Length: 259
Ligand SMILES: Nc1ncnc2c1ncn2[C@@H]1O[C@H](COP(=O)(O)OP(=O)(O)O)[C@@H](O)[C@H]1O
Ligand SMILES: [Mg+2]
Picture 1 (cartoon, rainbow, N blue to C red):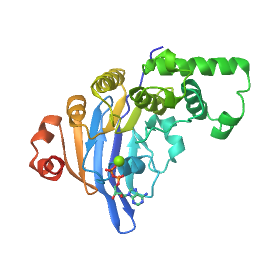
Picture 2: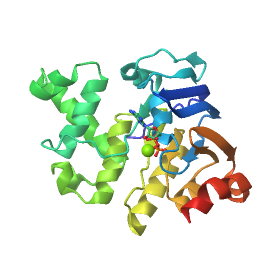
Picture 3: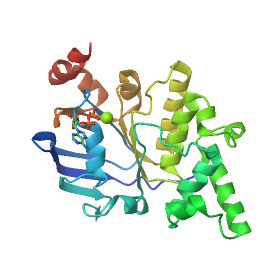
Picture 4: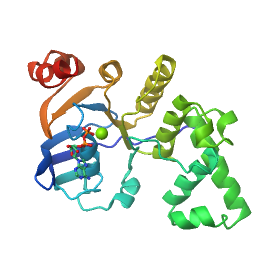
């Protein structure tokens, strides 16, 4: 099975989020072109994850969000997948007692409109439907290079690198046009990192639009087309990896501090 993504554009305008007196995000504006990979970097607490919460309407915020030509500012989080937008969370979030395959069936069922509770607590109504759902889930896992030998294991039993790929696979479910990833490389070693880079490049080559929050500079610099730099909720720079590498503001606010 080969998934084709439509590679929609994502546009955010003047996003702002306050937590009491803390201005966690302020006037953040950027656009990601169809099929582009945008990196978001910045020190801890810069507002990167909050930016995803703002984009996906999971927090009270100001500003506007547009997917392709459609204004989705007021679309609730659970309806954004139907516009092609999905996100993975910073921490691996799995149903620990279900197999890898069942986890994929669950997110895909959820996406097809049945309630999560029904998905988990009731067997799928028809035998044919169940068989098709499992085959689609298997295809989706294979597509993300989760080896078949892990499909019947519980998520906690598979190697850490594979867990990280699994969280991307579950976020993608049976296909996204725009995928938001939050620190996909966290804790990954060399070989797993190479696999992740290959996976991201492959998703891009299939036409997917990607936004990646990441601390790992080698990954961000090698895989992204453009980078947005956040510091204390504000966008202090944006540009190509080469431009960001040379930006004095970034060196001072971020790279300098991290070193
Ligand atoms: N739900 C929340 N309530 C209060 N403060 C929050 C909440 N979420 C994040 N923050 C604060 O907002 C700032 C940005 O956090 P976050 O977006 O998680 O940063 P990053 O992902 O860049 O490390 C931090 O100071 C954090 O403590
Ligand atoms: Mg974060």
